[in-house]
Length: 210
Image 1 (cartoon, rainbow, N blue to C red):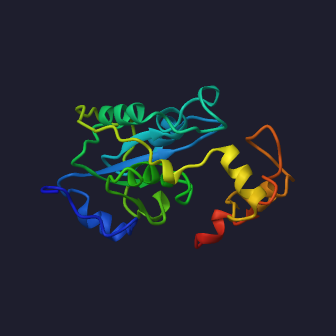
Image 2: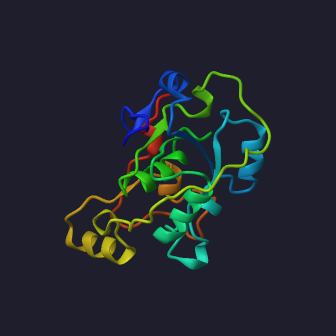
């Protein structure tokens, strides 16, 4: 699209972002999840200059009682309204980062990418940025136009579909959490410890370099 920077892929390096940070149509999303604290306080404490603040619980998911499980996807029109209110429009490209080695920023990347909106994750996250951070609250942004698009049905399954598939023995179900949570030794967030019967452990941290 005319006027929008071309992202090199689903990951961008800190060097690429430093070179293109002022490019027209490029916006940076600071995405945090602080289960026992404040995502906004974390943002105010230090963020990439000009980044938009997103709280995973508040901005990128419905409350648990409004959908299945924890962090259910919001309806497409709710997500579109959140993006629009943050100043992200149809003509923007988004680079997301977090302070959790990409595991949280990947949420907004997937939500944008799955509906065809250009997005990428900053490789290495905030700790890899290597430039002075800005502190304080985010600057006010004008509301943008963001078109609501349905979540593609072929990219999502519910719990019943997973159970049927496992019973048939056809797919591989991957549990990307920490090994100790998979084994049920600890459970800091969910009401029941352990894993879905038949799921295989493939911790996301195994795909991240030190």
